[in-house]
Amino acid sequence: MPKVKPKEGFTLTTFTDQIHELARPLWLRSVHHPFIKQLTAGDLPLSTFRYYLLQDRYYLSEFGKLHDKIADQLTDQTAINFLREGAAGLKNGEIAVRKGFFAKLNITQAEIDLTPIAPTAYNYVNHMYAALYQGSPQRAIAALLPCYWLYNEIGQALISQGSPVSLYQQWIETYDSDGYTDSVNQMIQLTNRAAGQVDETEKQAMTTAFIRSSAYELGYWGMSLRHESWDSL
Ligand SMILES: Cc1ncc(CN)c(N)n1
Image (tube, rainbow, N blue to C red; front, top):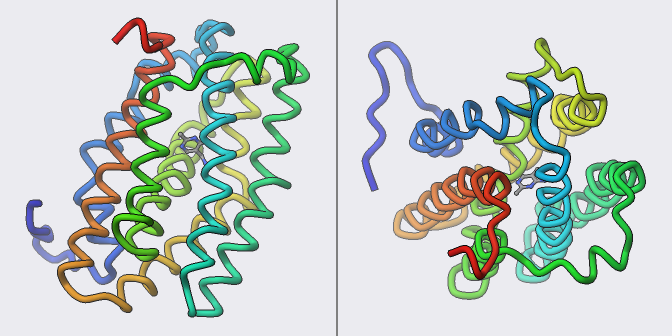
């Protein structure tokens, strides 16, 4: 893992500043990915957005469960409270917005049940579980962070341009909203708190988990554009 080298006159004060800086090249590729460009221009095929939503339903459901499973392994009450509230907030926020999208796109429960999980989504979720069960709750927190933070940066980058397609505009607004930004800031604080509880070796493992999640985030857009399947690998 490369060591952080701050630019002149610029100090990286927190752990999350440092890992954010390391992940920057991957995040920039996400922000400028053709999936995001097409979503903003309004020419992302609806079939591709549908594919993304169906995969993301699986992802978000596991992501929510992970909050509780991480909390089960912690003794730090502040962290436990945030993770439990985060799981509930996900259900009332992002997952609730997605239910509205499903209704608009006629995505039924039967279609959800029949949709196989694509390799990239499966691997990303398994990476987060591995961070917890082969690593530590702190490492799993770091693995969760790009999901919160990268989408907030994407929402903030896209909001001024927006999208001519109302569904895509709503997607952008979700990640630029004050409620979402608050949860991101809390998750950043939680990660810094977690980094303060572990030794240098585990901090390095947290960094690797964060970078790998950032790579999976990047892979997720390509997975969606390609409508990736186990047969198409
Ligand atoms: C894969 C993925 N990453 C992030 C997000 C935004 N929470 C999401 N819905 N899906």
